[in-house]
Length: 85
Image (cartoon, rainbow, N blue to C red; front, side, top):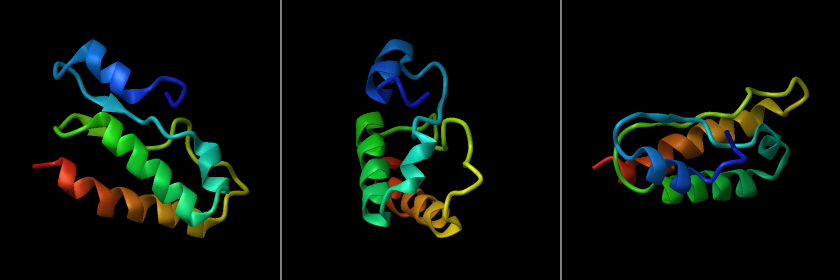
């Protein structure tokens, strides 16, 4: 979940299993720029390779602006490409 640094989790399990999640759902209340920064930070902590299912820790809260969810999804798609060589 988002309370565990993904680089530490990856170091513990290696390439033997996939890791899922790791973004705090409350981050969707932040500005679009801050959402993109958090996505970029998580991706850079995971580093290159497969086995990362990027999503929110526990889904989307009911009152989150849908546009912020879109920013999150777009950021994952746009920023993850260089990590999947």
